[in-house]
Length: 214
Image (cartoon, rainbow, N blue to C red; front, side, top):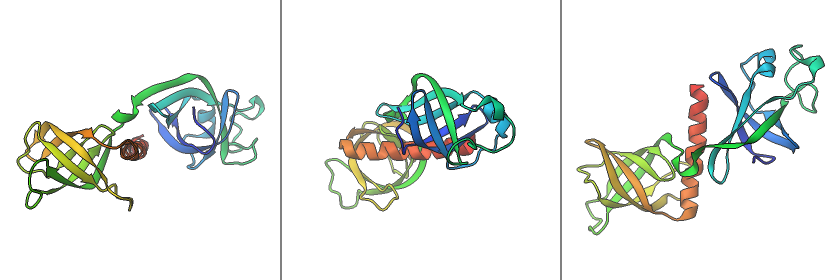
């Protein structure tokens, strides 16, 4: 379940997704600070079936619910959250248990990250390839820029996450040839903390990409 301080997506299905932050949790509800203002008109939002999406230990989860708005002020145009301490806060009343949408390792995002690849068992001089990861998940990545890849080839990689941190390193195997220079690389050996870093990056970027599409 989400906790105070977590950032979530408040979703109007097939319409929009709004970034929010949990400020209070209580029995059956969360107070959500609106980091972004909804484009959906207030009366429609108050009548809509909504969801929140968040990441937990298992992956990306979703909960259904509605805004908890007193009957006397529904649709009166006084602004989101005017009955609470902040005019930028809404109360989301949830129902049921979280539904797992995608396991953590299967959350994917389109990226453009610098990558170096070295075949295992070869002299690194002259065989290290500088490529790019163009799709990333906790279990593997789609790589562009490899020359003459071979199915089953085992490689050592170093992936720059683009945030100024130490690159993620590990080992992967070529499992899919898409085009002449695009291959699917499945991770075969990677430290758990490094894997979690990539999973969180994939989730954050996937979340932003879903919001733009919505």
